[in-house]
Length: 222
Image (cartoon, rainbow, N blue to C red; front, side):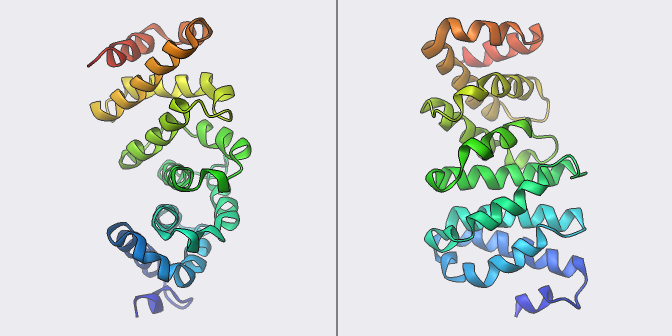
């Protein structure tokens, strides 16, 4: 019955209310949401292209939760989802919170199905969108995803390390990010330094001194 509010005659705010509710349901319900993926996903994919920023933002959050919890049922939609999210990373997307939620969706997809995503195409676009600008509720999932790729020395993330370090340095000096998030990113940087040593020096030297110092101080916390 909720879905009837998502039908065409209803205004955009009705549709986005439905999508936001479905996202919360998927988040709370976990794996059983997979039974509803085929009903929900076509609507949410349409909403990714809405002219309303709130609708695009809620749709991006919803596809992320559907992929995280929808298991195999969500897999067949990955191509369409990536296509829909790609537009939200373009310069033509005026809303930072929409882009942040698109990054959150990509992070959830990578964490559950990395082998189903063309990381060589997706990661450069994803990393370029960092640091997050507005929706810091997405910070932990986004930065944890990047850190997991770094800690596993994933071959597709390694060429992007200079861009990642630059984003992470902005995270640790941001007043909008929690100490928990800052510690996660700084620990990943410590790991890179311990593994790659001298190769990291020019990357760290290129940072503004305040950023480099902040990274070092969080990295040294125990």
